[in-house]
Length: 434
Ligand code: C5P
Ligand code: C5P
Ligand code: C5P
Image (cartoon, rainbow, N blue to C red):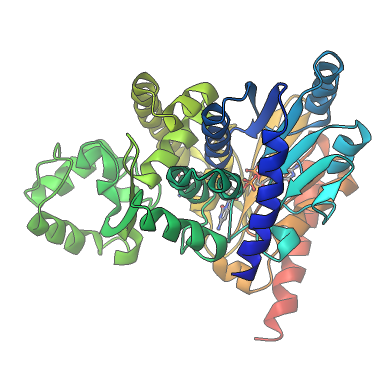
C-alpha cells in the first residue's frame, strides 16, 4: 500500500504538470494492446480536461523516431507524454532537452522521478515489478484516477492482460482491478474462455491460441467434435449442461484451468477485457493502430473492423503455427517465421526449453525469445541472454520471460550457438541449488 501511495504522489505531480500546460500535448505510444490502451487512457483524460493534443503510435522509440520528434520540437515546443516507452531512452530525451512525461514500465536507465525537465513515473523506481505487477496502461491509469476518471480502470486491466500479467493479477494490477470492481466498472466471473468472444463457439475453439489445441484448430475437426457432443456450433453462449459436456470432452486435450478461466467483464462496448485485448492485438499486428485506438474509444465502426481483422489474423496465426518447423539445439529451439507472429508462435511452442523465432528484414534478423514460469524458476533470464546480440553488432534485451534482439543476419548462426551456451549456463547455475 505504501508503494501505491508513492506512485500516487508522483501521479499528482504529473496531473499538475499537465494542467499547467496550455500548449500542444504530444502523446507517443506503443502499437501493442498495452500501448494502445495507454494511448486511449491519455486521450480520454486530455479530452475531458479540454487540452489540445496529437497522438502518434510507433513500434519502438528508436533513434530515428527521436530525431524526428526533435525536428518537430523546433517549430512546436510541445509537452511530450511517452507511454509504454521512454524509460530506456531517457538519456536521448535529456540530451535533446525534451519537456516530457514518461509513463513506462520497462526497466528504467535512470531510477529517478525528476530529471532535467522530465517527470518519470516508472514502477521499478518504487520496487514494483513492471513485468508482472503493472503495465504501462496501469501507470497511465494511476494518473487518470487523480483526475477522478475511475472508469478508465477497464482499459488499464485490458492493457495488463495484453502484456500477459493476469495469471494471476498481483500488486498494483490487483489494486486497479479492485478499484474497477468497487466502482462497478468491472466484474469477474469463472467461465469458459470461449465465451469471452462474440463469435460462434466453433470459431472460438478453432481460432483459440490460448489455449491452443492443435487437434481442434481446424474447422472440419472442430465441427465434428461439437456434433458428437450434440452442441450447435453456431451458438455463442452455451447452457450449463452444454458447458459441462464440452468441459468433459476438452479435458481429453487440456487441464480444465486452461479453458475455465476468470473472465473480466467490463463496462465497454466490447464487454470482455480479454476479447478487447485480443482485438487490439490483432489491430496492432496488422498495422491498424488507429482502428485500435478507435476500438478502445468505443467507436462502432472501428469495433466492426477490428472483429473482422481479429478473425483474419487468427486464421493466419493458426496457419503459421502449422507451418513453422522448429529446430532443436541442446538448450533452445528456434524457427524462422513471419513478421508480427514470431513472438506469439514462440510463446505457444515453449515447453521444456526456451524458443526463439526470427524473421529477416533486409540485412538484419529480428528475434523474439520466449520462456515460461518453470524455466524462469530454473534460472532462465532471456533479457540477459538477448543482450549478447551486442557482441555480434546488434542489440537486444527485455524481460526474463520474453525478450528480443536484432542483428546482422550473417551472424545469426554464431549468435544462436552463443545463446544456446548461455541458456545452458543459466539453467545449470540454478539447478545446483534445487
Ligand atoms: O508478442 P507478445 O508476446 O506481445 O504477444 C502477446 C499477445 O499475443 C497477447 O496480447 C495475446 O493477444 C496474444 N497471444 C495469443 N496466444 C497466445 C499468447 C499470446 O494470441 N498463446
Ligand atoms: O515490449 P513489452 O515489454 O511490452 O513486451 C512484453 C512481451 O512479453 C509481450 O509480448 C508479452 O506478451 C510477453 N510476455 C510473455 N509472457 C509473460 C509475460 C510477458 O510472453 N509471462
Ligand atoms: O519484439 P518482442 O515482442 O519479441 O520483444 C519482447 C521484449 O523484448 C519487449 O519487452 C521488448 O521491449 C524487448 N526488446 C528489447 N530490445 C530489442 C527487442 C526487444 O528490449 N532489441
